[in-house]
Length: 286
Length: 289
Image (cartoon, rainbow over all chains, first blue to last red; front, side, top):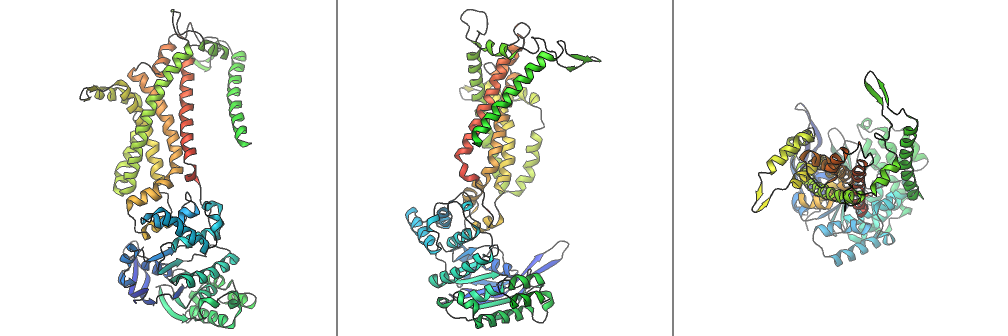
């Protein structure tokens, strides 16, 4: 079976005013295996979201090629080979929770009964069965994001693209959502490309963490995490020594030789789930 | 209850207006105040400012002293119904044209650059200048056996005033969806038409409803003014002119068609409010996550 995502020597250059240009992504090579969870992490401007947008065919690479399940990114988008979730839930406010989850199915001509059944199934999966007929403005931010994730799973994609989906949530909701995402991935077997700012989040979720650096955006290092199968990842893992070792490895990769580029804000945000000494260390890092 | 409170306050406003009228009439100078030939305070005699009672009792008297003449209020109701029908036709044409223009401008950037200045400019042409022009051109139009009617000219002029707020409001509404929503539709690989129907049109409704209300008010004003300038009989516009000439001997009479115009305005605003009620699920906002 072909890889879920193959990024081959892809670069992205945005033209600016007066003939100048901004190199958002230098030549990038990356493969994601089927069922693999890969996080993209790095400070603002490192091109992690741009890379995700290239995979989703929301932007086209300036050079190089992107393949999703052996097809071009464009063909994969047309064939609905991936589901996507953004930082904002992006639900349509005039549709009920069920209506929002049914949206992609409806647009692709799935019959009404089949849509209802699938929506009910997904609502059970994300634990919102009691909220099927509510409207988005009646839900909390975390619930809205769960609906958005259910919507991205509607067509049972083999690949999930997620751009900081928990970025706007509070810490407690965020950790719960991470636990749920691990469970969902285990149940659906989908590959995931996950963009995040948070080191502990990336480590907790991923098989591999891709550490990126800005100006120009490039991959600095790929850290294999390997904290075991999804089945035994739970809150206990957040306290395990292996977890902390991986967090340190990612942090060192982030700061690396040109650590000064990583702004304090990024470090703080990355470290905020760690308690006590860990947090202090995060603050001290320049 | 905020709802009944609103009704109460609205009624209070009307009563206050009546009280102000009567208080000024009682206290103001009978022949007004004139400084250097300039009237700075209106006259308060019974001809210029009839008592409210005169206006209302006049409604229940016959239109003229001729035998068999209907009561004034029934004549006004008939005229108001006539005008409301024309205004409704004008409003409908205006809404359809305004929506089509907005959709065209949303679809093609160049169309927006080319059309929008003309849309804005169109509203600077005075109605009085336009009315005879439309009637003149209309009189040369024939559809087979059917001839262009004067009421069609009036409806056309009403639609000319109505389309403007609709096209501007709808354009803003159609362009209101977040980038994330538009991109979501792109990831679903659906084209412009499906995006319009599932995303842009529903998203435009909160912008469209105030525009529809403005369009309704504009259509009513356009109808009344166009009736006067074209000289169409049967509506409240012409009735105002006819009855104004009677004011010297019958001061309550000219107020009747004015009340008729007010009722038309209220009715059309009510109709738009009913549309808004039917579309209320599209007026929900998404709470930021």
